Length: 322
Image 1 (cartoon, helix red, strand yellow):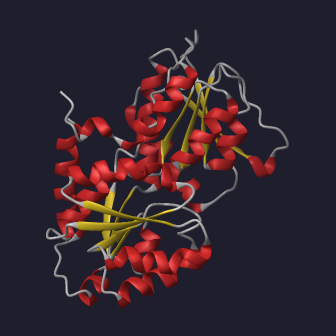
Image 2 (cartoon, one colour):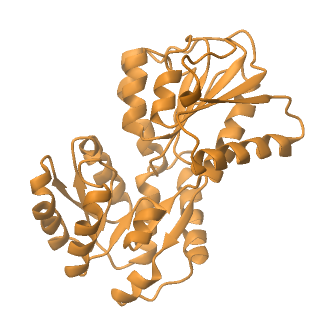
């Protein structure tokens, strides 16, 4: 029986309207694929780590005959794969956009993809969810709230800044926050000039700020002013990446490229055995916790180790999913 918290998993809700529009038509593909083509737009450390781990996971199963081929879009003029016999795994938005143009009968799984970007490509490509899916970058809000409650158990109000992309999650944030015993204090930012004033307003009415990815709000250029403003108001920020924690956020839930690769390998093996049907888009299954203990000391917080915090969040996250 799915709990109330579990059944409002954010990524399912964000796709609900697409299911209605598309009728959730899932094509039955006659032939199971025999190989996997990994498509990337550039040779990066993250992509290399994903590929190495993905291959290792297939080897570890000892019963996989799937051959893996790599295509770098920088080194080819036209993306071509063995149609109907390949699963395509696209690393990043550019690679997924290129892969979306392949024949509809070719299953495509995107990774390192923000949910809004996946939604947009799904509609634009007119593909079906049975052969076009993703492991999205976004962590479930419920998981992020669990982290906040473990680090700041007395917190009651959490501020969020929502921009043009992230505003679609306003209602879901409030629902997930309420389930976690938190009131979400929302401020909308639609102009760059409004960022700091809206940030000050959000911090003034909350115990901490939870960063929700939105390119208008969170970028390399805005990281320093956002973090400095929160420090001046003595209100910590919970980020969504390791880099944001290193820059000065208090903590974050994140999934490494190795963890995403492990999940992708599991999907590849399962879908090969089920008529090439891919599962619906899903949030990262495996995750880690990172805490900036220097920042914690500046806020006079005495915290347990990353591992202890992770184990508590994992236990609660597992319980909610049941």
